[in-house]
Image (spheres, rainbow, N blue to C red):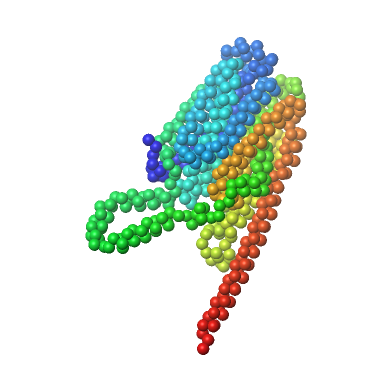
Length: 552
């Protein structure tokens, strides 16, 4: 019942529009963990680990019961966030392999089903948190895997939009990054008095609509580009006029078979030549994948991306505790008034953080603009512009843009680390904005750099491998969180200071890229000089031969 690629191409606007909405509501929603954590604690998940609350929880039948919280509860719930966020990044490599083999349709169906199951499991857990709290680990695992399936498959849609593909791609990435706003939005509904279980069941039902939309509109084959759709339309028009062709063959039945075969062969060769891209990767010198993986640029990118991912994920998991420490200043036994004030401020600032995630819809196109800077001057064709200037080399321009983008992103990350150290609640709004910008920038920077440096057939595997290694590196956020709430007694200062100093390593990648860029410039300059010398030598020989040919 899957539609054909031609039908899917005609529905591309609907598919792109629904994909943006689906990314917002169902992709990386776990990144809004701060708001979900408050709701899970209010529903009593793992509250039985808090000895003070054991009697109350065991006898609780009223939904209005107030569950107490403790360090052990926070550690267990943060472990769930660690697992879910790990799958959200680590699954990209196997998903890339599976999508290359089976296409995006089955993966999107699987992802939407997993997300529906995850919401159902969370709802079931809330019915009996004393006995079913362990289901949260399975729920966040399905949530993370289902979310990345939806995100990954939506990145295949821009090929149907031709010159607008970069714009559509930025919308897909922006909606994925902005999906952290979903749980804060859910929390507003929760605070309005709607049951947490009802919210989760409705969300599960909405995920089933994503399954239905994919089932009806996503083709089993690869998407057509506008050029492929045009050729397909022309082919279908040709098949419709088959009778005219047979009539033409009848009129020309006296043509010698050799001439007719030659004519048909020329037409076939001409059509095949149209299908060949200008830069056929099969005609280029193949670069071993091992060489790409072991290159210094890829290794530096692993360090930079792993460090950035750890910084981002740790802040998301520990944000509520950091904000609470800013209010209580580490007082282990705050007064009732101070405890209420801390909870209210954490609640309001978590909502602000969630709302600011929509900035990703603006920041992702911004970094896309930086990555596409002056790329129009690099269009293949004449080597000189209308004003006589030489065209820029596309690879060198992409590398230049990647250097600027990485430098800007690392600078923002460093400033983000500084604002985390400031003991002021109002300043943390600036921290939220910087966090959102860095999260929206970093993946676009890395993708643009890989596209500039490595062969196109290595791009998907390198990106998936980098995401998986970064996810493994980000697992360090769990021991850091335990150290913060345990030995450090909730004080995040020293961990933030260590991560701030560690973030300086991110500037090593743009530094090496600058060195690599200059090396390529010198190499290109040398090739131009050699080409000029060869041309001069050939012209000299030609002139000499021409003069010899006119001797009396």
